[in-house]
Amino acid sequence: MSNTLHIPQQYDTTDLESFNNVKQWLHEIDRYASDNVNKLLVGNKSDLTTKRAVSFEQAKEFADSLGIDFVETSAKNSSNVEKAFMMMASQIKARYKPVVAGGNQAGVNLQGQSVAQKSGGCC
Image 1 (cartoon, rainbow, N blue to C red):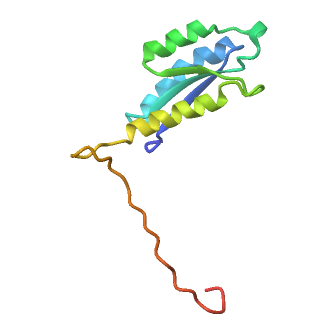
Image 2: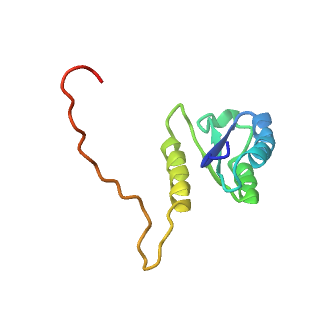
Image 3: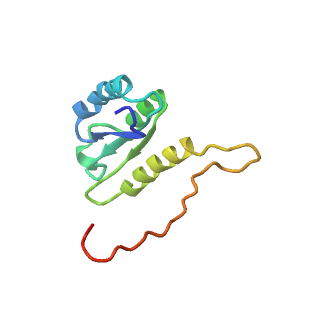
């Protein structure tokens, strides 16, 4: 896990035990992942409002206390699923957007080279 860029921590909004386990999971991430790994708390099954065991406010407060982002999603109706992925991508992009002297962004210059065609055979 040392080269991992982002680890989303998902819990079930209808299961208080899964939410309570997040603290242990985050401890394991801190223990085994690189120091600067991005984290995102994801509450799933947000569509099951009548079965909710963890309030949005409770989860948001917990995430804020840890300094990590939070989003609720529903795989059933695709609510905020794309948003969760975009949040992770934004965090990764922000971390790897170094600026070099003169205001130019550092980057990789990829150039293609033609490959000589071999006739016959597969090798």
